[in-house]
Image 1 (cartoon, rainbow, N blue to C red):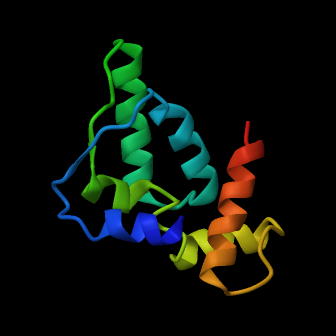
Image 2: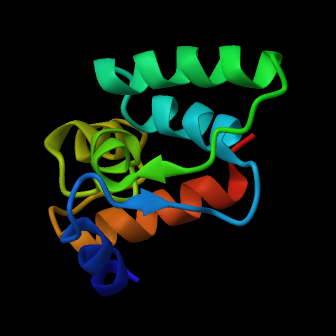
Length: 110
């Protein structure tokens, strides 16, 4: 999975990303929990909340925006790893373990 995501991250920032479902708002709520001090993420959450309140779609996104706000593309960032450590979800510095901890957390996040 990390290798597949690395391919996406290598694309130009203006590459559009079309997901199959409208999960952006719920995904951003998880992202805020994973990286609460990310100002780009806070701005995006506010924008998406307003869009959804108007019944607008949040798709497509861009690789550049995803690189700034998607924790699954940011699992190597110290801020994401710190949250995982502080929550007792990560006990190593291994990046793949950080990704796996994020994925496991997302599976049970409400």
